[in-house]
Image (cartoon, rainbow over the protein chains, first blue to last red):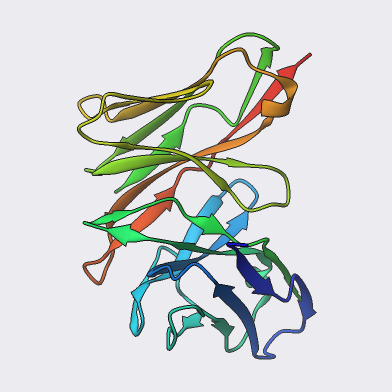
Length: 115
Length: 115
């Protein structure tokens, strides 16, 4: 089954404790992306990756890191989480051809709470 | 600055009527625009993609128009049903800081279809 998986689904942590949210897709997609979703602010892009070793900042990259060492995986790293990073996080993947990022497949989401 | 606006936060319509949702953008020149559906607590699901040279696209009860002069897309659901109740998001591409193409989402319109 074609899917994007994220782990963990729920996480409660404390300020400053480094964490990683994993994302994996089994569709051989080139394009992968991380979003956060907050009430009233919608879905905002954190980082995206065009392919292995190619990443770029989205609209809200501060406080986050990513890496793309393998095509299927795109982990999101919070080196020193703060309460303002409490949010619902989504990973997505997509094919990309001739300059068009086609339909994005989204993971189930990770609800992160930083106290 | 670049901005994507979706007509209203919430839209209530009677079952059987046509729902029309609006997506307006400023300071973008998107090559294409996408519409997604999102149910509470779940990741968005792709519905339709329309390119800048296409005026209209249809899929079953869904119809999307794209007017690059008005910088607007309209999303129609005909013969609406309570099961269509969800939040609908438009998304379009833009140049990222690294010169790559990123995808930006509007804040969404929550549609409620009343039986």
